[in-house]
Each structure stands twice: as structure tokens, then as C-alpha cells.
Image 1 (cartoon, rainbow, N blue to C red):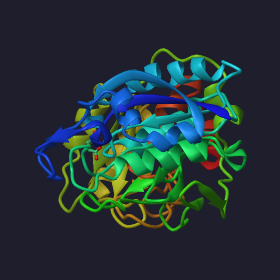
Image 2: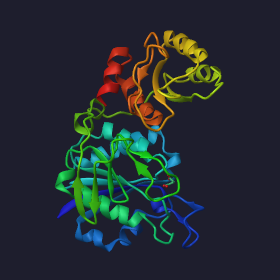
Image 3: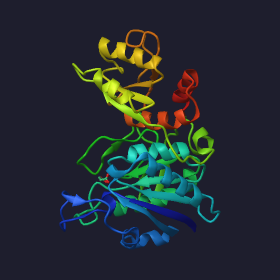
Length: 326
Ligand code: SIN
């Protein structure tokens, strides 16, 4: 039998509220030991080692906590007896942590994130079954080398592309137009696709221990949005992710401000507020190609990548290459 480490960080999977109810609860209350005890069939799948690293609502996650989590998991993975890791996490910011870990964990061992939409005290809580399947996935040979994965509602998602698309249903995640990596049926694992983007052991960002990250902010464009938003962010951020309309677009006033701030050394990445699609270079909205196209990354994932990339380089061409490769 394989040995799987469960690293708990909190979230709704560890949440408690009024018995039976699914809303108005506190995330991050129950100890991981108690969650594991509620799933006896886990013992038939793997030897479990549990680590309660944090017990927070994932809205309290931060770049500093990402670093603590990533360095902690990297250390656990160095133990030859550990075959894979499952991370329990709140669903609200799981997409950001998943991408961060996908870029910073130096391993080819399976790492699977999961959580729940209903607290542990709800009728038909979804957490225990998600955790059971996440452990089965982390213990499966086919999961080796796939990068950080996420498991929800019997569906396997890539840490790069997972997005929360529903704030109510238990089937709350998608992977843009890329479908998913695969499905599970109880403990059975069925992979159907693979990510081609660089991750985990091959990632530049997993090759050394990081202790700090540069500040990167996100500016959301809307009809009539003032360029003061950009000037305000530029005061204490090295990079700004633009959440543009359509294909990553904005007004002429924003364009002028972006060009001015680029000359002052601020790095811009263009993303879109539209849920599906891709952002390429654009000769109309960015005639001097000041901005790096965010491709298929959501603004919050582009922020993760830019924070890591700026730790290594400020060279515009290298940053563009990183956004194409990761
Ligand atoms: C959280 O993200 O910690 C709360 C919400 C959830 O886990 O679904």
C-alpha cells in the first residue's frame, strides 16, 4: 500500500454550521484527524499521514502563506516513504493556490487538491467523498508526473486551468474550454488529457526555495473606469494585471496611462474579464506591445505567474516567453 500525506489548510471541507444546513457556516474549524476518521475506507486505500498546517477560510490565504505551504509540501515530498500528497483547501481561492503549487513544487509525485462546497455538518456533505477520491487519485500510478491536480465531483482538473464557476452547486469547477484531465468512478481513475504547460519538477520556479514575492495587483476595467485605478496600483506594485473587456481591451485613456507607467517600469499583463477565450497581442489596444498577453490565464492566475516571474527577471522578452510556456 502507498503512503499519502494529507496536508490540511481549512476551508468548507473543515467547516461547521447549524446541523444539516448547507449555508451560513464557519470554514476551517474541524481538525483533519476528525475528517479522516469520518472516512473509514481511506485506510483500505493508503497509509495516511496527516498534517494540520493551517485551518483557515481560504479568503485568508496570501502570497506569504503560499510560500509556507509550498515549502512545507516540498519538505514532505523529500521523504522517500511518501508517495503522494493531498491538500485540503477552501474552494474560494483554491484556483490560485493550485497554480502556485503547480509552479513551485519540485516533484513528479502526485499532488491533488480538494475541498468541499458544503460544510462537514451539512446533510450530504461533499467533502468526505471528494477527499476519498483525492487520496485514491494521489495513490494511483497514472497520476505520477501530471502536475498539481484538483479533484471535485469525480472530475480531475489541472491546477493550471481550474476555475471556480459556481458559488452554490457542489459541481462548482471547470477548466475553461479544455474540459478536464479525467474522471473517477469511486476509486477508479480515468485520464483523458494532459497539460502541455511546464509544471512542478520542470518548472523554473520549483528549482529553489522562495521566501518572498514581489507585489502584483489586478485592475478591473469597466465602462468609464478611471485611470486613477492604475496610478494608485502603480504606487506600490511592480506589476499590474489588466482585467480588460472582450479580448483584454480598455479605453484610450487606459492605453495612454499603461504606456506612461510602462516607461516608469511597471509590468502589465493583459487578461480578460470574459470567462472563456484567449488574450493575444493586439495592435489596436496595445500598439507598442507594452503588455504581456495573459493567454488563457484568468487574472488571478496571471498574477500568480507574474509574481513568480518577476522574482527571476524584468526582461520583457523573457517574461513573454514565461507566459507562453507556463
Ligand atoms: C473557503 O474558501 O475557505 C470557504 C469556501 C469554501 O471552501 O467553499
